[in-house]
Image (cartoon, rainbow, N blue to C red):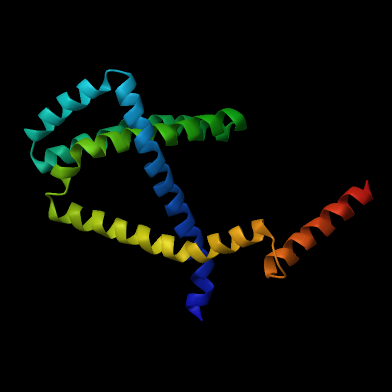
Length: 176
């Protein structure tokens, strides 16, 4: 009984997690292109050489720096929200999210080998990867239903849904 009540929560959590994972996957190649376009490749090489000389614990500090540096940007976004600057707040928060994910992907690429030397970090990383796979498995039937609904072919549930949407749209237009 409790599991059924929590099912929507777990699905929502899985969707949020997958959006984060999707952003990570899609921003990493963009960051690679940016690195190739501007002299970040030399910076990445320089940073890699410095990280090789660090202990795994010190590498964790390097990995955490972008989170600390970008935190004020999130505070600015919250301030803008509190003062009802909705568009500016949305732009700052979204830009901060993309920038944060991009920088984190860049730094994680450089620090991954050292970070995975720490047993607790490796367990956490493996746990997150397992949760990512579980979230994808949980959301897969929902994605499949959405695809079927968008196709709208046959006498399936999806075509009935599309007919209901069409009927609703027609009633809204007739009311005008």
